[in-house]
Length: 114
Length: 109
Image (cartoon, rainbow over all chains, first blue to last red; front, top):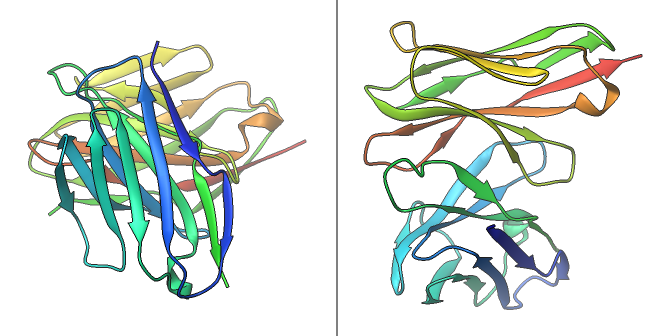
């Protein structure tokens, strides 16, 4: 069966510091991978998605970047955090073939920028 | 573009039945999905409709009418643990998921 991991679970960082959040998926090959952000009491905002190694698409201009160094690894980064980067960051995966449309979420990383 | 509407909040009593509606505007999509999200946790997949009609999964059922741009999630025999946000989402052809704002359901004793 497939599982998705994210770490860390919680992070408190000062403004201007760098960020690296990691997501890994097990039990599947060539998944589509996604990074979402959810601000407190708000909906899901798609940040990045990837259909393969080294292939990253950005949905909104922002202070963040993403990378996919391996098939089942997706990393979200920032060089200098802003207060507005606080939120709940969710990684998700979806099968790449037809009939594999359901998206599954990791446990999330709660980021607080002070 | 796509737009998804859901009621912001709903309240129901333990043991009752509640229907959470979702309306959307999109020209075509691969499926309509419902997710449950407890406070402070990640969304978990509940159901997926491709064709018109009702999909039943235990206490939860989901209905889709493509012609009307309408779906609902039906929760029966409500339990306290069903208090959560319920997210409606569509997967438009050749595009990424579009999530609704979510409906926060409170189940009262």
